[in-house]
Length: 256
Image (cartoon, rainbow, N blue to C red):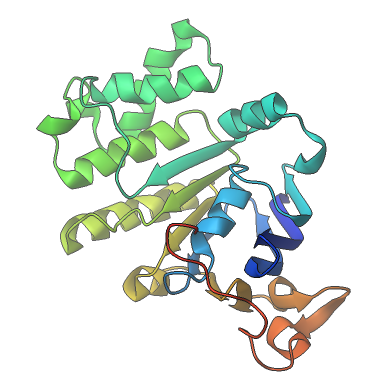
């Protein structure tokens, strides 16, 4: 069952800058996959659109089968809070709150009743191996532990999909290995996880990889993911005359 679908999604900035060009992608429940590409390739733009943080210029985005284009801002916010979990390179934790309270904050935004939040937060922290750190604040935790708190916050509400943006980028190799092992474990338990990364080692661990170049998908494990508009068997590179980057202007890292 598809939990996330992008169909012919294009994102432009002004008349000349193409951040994403006719991207189509289907994500099945329980998948773990990586989105890879150099800085400026469109990874962050794609994540923002997948996470409903930004809207495409054209094309269709469906979350749990729901077309997001017809939603109001409030409805989009509610869908995002309910169905999408985020993990960021810089953790985005409140240093003044305990690990439990940080996870509970995510549940608050998801509309979980107050009486249930603490128990669900404790369960999520236990799933990531931090049942002994419930009352610790971020400054008392290692980088790897802080990232695991962020993952617990993302999964506590049982979202449709977790989007992890460079989740190992701020970690040393040992903690990066632990975090990737955790994401793999969560996927084996049924979580749907997308990892945005420029790290070839991280990408190599993924059972499915989607490669971006200048806003175009130039490689994926399934042919349907690289199809041009109206032709599910035609790779994008072929549809663009064999040049996957032709016609797409570059964006600065800030724009992406």
